[in-house]
Amino acid sequence: GEIPEAPITYNVVGNTNEHGLVIAETTFGGVDILTNAAYAQKGAKIDYGSLIYIALQRSKTVKEAIETMTSLMDEYGYASEGESFSLGDRSGEVWIMEVIGRGQYKVGAVWVAMKIPDGMIAAHSNQARITTFPRDDEEHCLFSDDVITLAKELGLYTSSPDDPDDLLFSFSDVYNPVTFMGARASDARTWAIFSTLAKDTTFEKTYEDYATGQNKTNRMPLFIEPHSKLSFENIMTVMSNHYENTALSFDQDVGAGPYKAPYRARPLQWSYKDISYHNERAVATQQTGWNFIAQIRMNKPAPISSLLWFAVDDSSTSPRFPVYGCSKEVSAAYSGKGTQDGVPSPLLKFDMQKAFWVQNMVANFVYSRWDDAYPYLQTKLATIHEYFKQEVDLFDDQLMELYDPNDYGSMVDKATSFSVQAGDWLQKEWVDFYGELFARYRDFFTIEEDREDPVCNCKVQPGGFSDEWKAKIVEETGEHYKCLDDNSVPDTFEMLQNKFRDGKSLRGGVTKAE
Image (cartoon, rainbow, N blue to C red; front, side, top):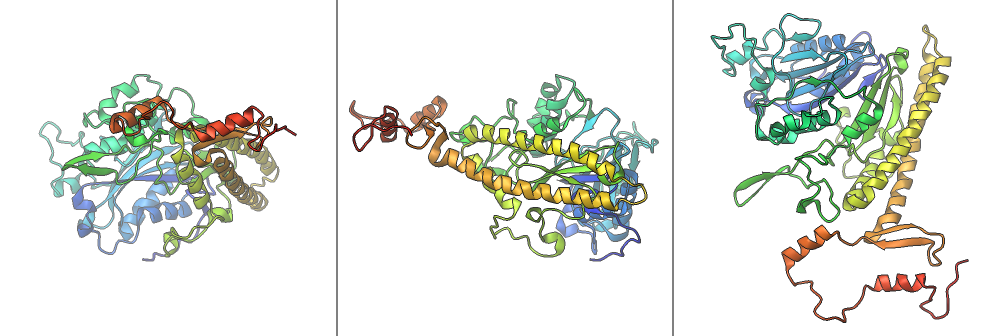
């Protein structure tokens, strides 16, 4: 559908704009009566993606964005499932807003928005998180007039004689009740993030029974106090989380394979002999289309106040590059048309010129040798991100030299050029890195440089199996692979390597390193 254009719009790149406003989301679904396609809002024009990008085009602040989003939904209808939105601006305000459509009963959506207090952090991951909320504090909480009455009309909520003012009404519990998978496959990721960053060192164990789905009433708070002021590295760490060393760790069982990969094939839920099972769904997952870390610098002029660290694919394996919020273009490696332009995304057309494919190539190769290749990848990521951080620090100074409060033109042009070049450079760097990874870990070997080796200037080590994996093979296969005599053929590859190391040529004579 179409809606009228606004008289004034702002530059938008990714999930930020030229005024330092940032909006992100996760989908939580919600109760069937409001999300089932059979009960869809007739004529609704605004889905959650359009809601984000139109709000960014028309708003400078979080409060303006909330007003824009709610007005758009009420006027043009809401055509998506339940959503949690994160909103932040250069004034330092951060809000969580949760919405769910009114279904076939009324145009628009019901919603609640809560301000996150200074010094606190919040997260959401495909499970509604706002429970009870204050009704008389517009500085910290906003909500639709019918957020409670609609629930009553639909039989989703009934007032209690002990609570005539409905102060115990919980948005999440009414519109997106926690299920086992809601806790285990969704909110558990918030638990992992909070457990890593919380000042309270008991947080992980306190809410472990909730994250594992065993106690769905032990709800986590909407926000917590972190152990320290968060850094870019802190956010990188939690975006790479696979539940390592927690009750939900899944890199040790048979599903992880010999290289202990915390990844599983979809579907998320499966059955065996009529019993349902599930895979874990960590923060970092292979089904990621794109991801970002947004940095809002309150001490910078509006056009360069927001910095989007953007990546495509898995958030633990993908390199991020900086994009200024005022940028009018992005690297060709990261641009293209898709469903947002009314055309199908070209997901079956491989293109080495596009970051999506190159970053998928690296990630999928690393999955196959996780225990060996992932630490090597992480070192590379850290190097790239540190390089970009230093470049941004230097470039910010150059941009400030062009600062003119009455004319941002030169600053915007230079910031755009930097953002494009950063994406171009990273694309080439990641293509080269794929080649480096492939050469190093091909054919289940680990091949490292060794200048003293006369054959290839390299040291070749067979991957082999860990004792844990050997035990699993023997337990499953018994004597199927057992050598039945003492004269079994030795590993030919090892034999050849030893000959070369001893300086003996297979053709006779002695090899010499040049």
